[in-house]
Each structure stands twice: as structure tokens, then as C-alpha cells.
Length: 359
Ligand SMILES: Cc1cc2nc3c(=O)[nH]c(=O)nc-3n(C[C@H](O)[C@H](O)[C@H](O)COP(=O)(O)O)c2cc1C
Ligand SMILES: C=C(O[C@@H]1CC(C(=O)O)=C[C@@H](OP(=O)(O)O)[C@H]1O)C(=O)O
Image (cartoon, rainbow, N blue to C red; front, side, top):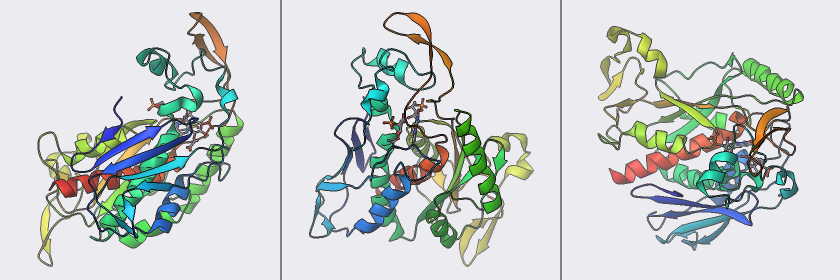
């Protein structure tokens, strides 16, 4: 298994959704950093399940306990380890799923890879629950980045054919990103947000699920982070984004649409403002040659519809090698997008922090 990521900072996650706990060890943080623990609680609360009808009903506080690396209100330089205790497991829901595999989840590939020894309860180590430790790490990283005026934020860009207004790729105020963080369903156009919410609830009523896209940005990044070939900013970020369960696509700047443009449209032309190099457009999403340009870093991540749905589906019983049918019972997110907002921000902060320390 590969539960460790990072070069200068090593993030190492552990745990299972229905085990005792989940958590993370962050190795390589400098000593002497004062952390606002309430702010970390706030970030954890943004992701915690069971808070509204758009979320799985599983109720977890997602409060964290720091086990090491923090003393007298400061990081010590030793590995910072935080644990999040699980409390509301309904493992009975998963008895039927031990052999009858959910289409779209990791049940089959997990079974093959770990020879049937994987903890299948609640998706085990594959569960979206493992994103709670990522949010802890992201909250720590965000605080370190904020001291350098680097801010990260995101909004729901698309759900089921309903589109929010995209970010202005050249000018994003930190204040906007701060406001979005305070919104549990962050969109730039509240009317579109309401339509998205209605659609999620309609889909849930139909015992189905729906996917969508998150747009995220990081502002005030210095020019010069990342390096060719294999440590490009895109590859670092994509590595972490594709580690989030249910992410199936990532695009930077104008993304796939840039392929339809001519060079004269796609090139971001330069100018100087107050001695700083800027571009009039930002189709490249703040990255050129794998290196930050100093323009806002902008990207989108596409989430698939939740695999576990109440509609009857064709599948197999792996122990009998027989075809069968499955209607998933239990507690699931009708849409993952709004729950993944703080997770996308968290991995962005982790990637930027590692790049910054590697610079
Ligand atoms: C925050 C979050 C919550 C999730 N909630 C659910 C859920 O309730 N039910 C489910 O089947 N999948 C859920 N997922 C997605 C699955 O964990 C994921 O689809 C599965 O592990 C297979 O991985 P893959 O989709 O990347 O192939 C969630 C993912 C995230 C990030
Ligand atoms: C627990 C969380 O979400 C879970 C993610 C998840 C999955 O398959 O990814 C399946 C469900 O697990 P359970 O059946 O144990 O309720 C969700 O509730 C969480 O996000 O904290």
C-alpha cells in the first residue's frame, strides 16, 4: 500500500472507516509553529459527515487528538501525529457486501489486490472517510501558507448540468476565498446553488446519486515553485487530487477547452503592474513549464456520482462466482462534491507547502 506522500514533508495516513480510528502523521514540519487548533476544528467540521440532508447520515464529530509533535502550543519538529476516533460504524450494513460487490466502488479491486483480506466494512481504507486526516493536514498547511499571504479556496462549479459562474482567472481576492470557506455549499451564484441542491435531493429521492466538478484556486503564490520534468506543479497536484476517492478528472486553467483554441487565443500575454509580471489572461492556470508564474493557480476536479446507491443493479457474488443483483442499503452521500470541497483545498495546501519547502 502507498499511504505516504511528499518530498520535504511526508504525509502518512492510516486507518479504516469501521476500525477504531483514522489519522495522519506529518513528518518534516519545522519547529516553533503555533497552530490555531480552533481553526483546524473548523476545517474538520466543514468535511464532517451527518450534518445535513446532502450528506451521508453517518454522524461523526471528526474532532482530532494530537498524539505527538506539538508541545507548549508549538510544533516541536518531531512528527506531528493526529488521530480521529471513529464512533458511528454500522458494520452490519456491510455483511451483504463481503461477497456481493458494489459496482463502482473498490470492493472488487480491493478483494483482488489484498486477496480477500481487505477490511471491506465501510469501504475500509478505500473509504472517503480517510479524507478527514487529509483535512487535518491541509488545515495545518493552510495556516503556514496564510502566514505568507497564500490563500486557497474553492466552489462547486458544476452538478448535473447546472453550472456556477467560473472564477475570474486573473483576479481572485483572498476575501472571496475566505467567504466561500464559510459557506457549506459554496457557489458564486446562489441561485444556481439552490438549483444544484434541489437536483441532489431529487436524485436522492430516486435512490440514485450525482457527480460534479469543483473549481479551486490558490492566490499570492510566488513565481518559481515546481520544477521540470517530474516535479511539475501539475503532476504534484494531480497526484494528490487523484488520490481523493471518486476523483476521475483534473484540468488546469482553461483545461480541455484550451485544445480548441488557437495559439493567439490561448497564449497569456504579459504586462507589468507595479513592477510585477502579470498576464492579461490565465488559460494556463498560473503554471508554465510546470512552474508557478505568480498568477492565480486554478484547476478543476471532476467527481463521479457516488457508487453506493439504492437502485437495483447487476453484480456478482465473488465467493460463488455467480451473477446476482444488489440494492445497497446503508448510509451514503447522494453527492460527493459538496463534501469534498475542504478535501480538495486540503490537498492543494499540502502540495503547495511541500513545493514551497522543496524550493
Ligand atoms: C468525502 C467523500 C465521501 C464519500 N462518500 C461516499 C459514500 O457515501 N458512498 C460511496 O459509495 N462512496 C463514497 N465516496 C467515494 C468512494 O470512497 C470511492 O468511490 C471508492 O473508494 C472507489 O474509489 P474511486 O471512485 O476513486 O475509484 C466518497 C468519497 C469522498 C471523497
Ligand atoms: C464516514 C464518512 O463517509 C462514508 C464514506 C463512504 C465511502 O464508501 O467512501 C461510505 C459511507 O460509510 P458508512 O457506510 O460507514 O456510513 C459514508 O458514510 C465520512 O466521510 O466521514
